[in-house]
Image 1 (tube, rainbow, N blue to C red):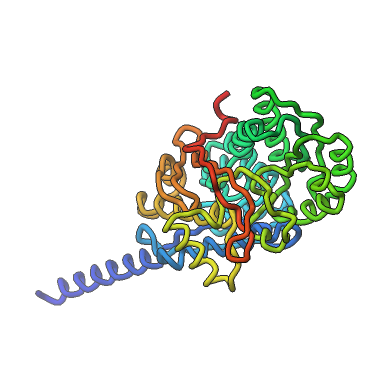
Image 2 (cartoon, rainbow, N blue to C red):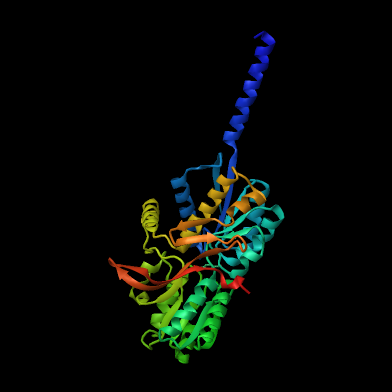
Length: 388
Ligand code: PHB
């Protein structure tokens, strides 16, 4: 090889080396936007912990790229969520937007996903219509109609012929009210009244008094994760349990994050939901153990599972597309089937929404701690809000 050839070869080798260096440094960025402060901070804490656990277990390189998780606090204010999402897309060039602790936060951000063609993975929010707000939205949490219809079937078969609904006055509460009421009435039961409480800082007392006066067999409740404890306390203080009124609802009111601190007043509460920390599977036992070990004993709730499964969907799509983005990444998220700590689940390719089992559970003491003990299973429940 003469000198000129040698130089050319060296230059080519240098180019190759710098290309592969650039590749090694290429990032796969996930923008995780969560309420990390305020009344819904527990949702942010649970989801961030679950996302970090997933990364610790599955490595921080996927599809040949280094995963960078960018966590931002939106303080549960929709305009803040939207602004952060815009900054993450434009400045940080994230391939995925994820998180979304409340319905209004997901809805406010949907146009950003559509305009920038960025897949948006909803890990928490649960109003049925969210997935229809953008063709770039995928959901790994759950929907309220899934849970509400299951209870509307179970309750009348178990001695509940009259009920009053008591829900937070926004998307998921209105979904829970509508689908529970319709199903109860379809099954021949009566809804005596439909009560809505403010979503933030609710004072349940006057509503619970109203329920007491109406004397239904049960009160059916939805409040978002994080604020179920005062409801439970006031239910007992108002003497509704002593008046023979049963408390039923979605699993949000017996949230695993705070259930153990609610005390014996929670015993016997029946709820329908997609996840319990005591779900009996090898995978869930492993998940709960690892989560608690990494988080000072904190028990994972359904928010954590939505976050953990969301990371699974993102990782597998990144693998399939070699760290891709946009439509290709979205398409690789659709139709994923896998075992979650909640049980079997899949992402319906048509609706981009989660399909999973709904369990009927009762709060019981197990080894001195309160758990939602699953005792009946409805398999592969699609969102009833999508079949119309
Ligand atoms: C929601 O805002 O969609 C939401 C939040 C917390 C829940 C369920 C739904 O527990």
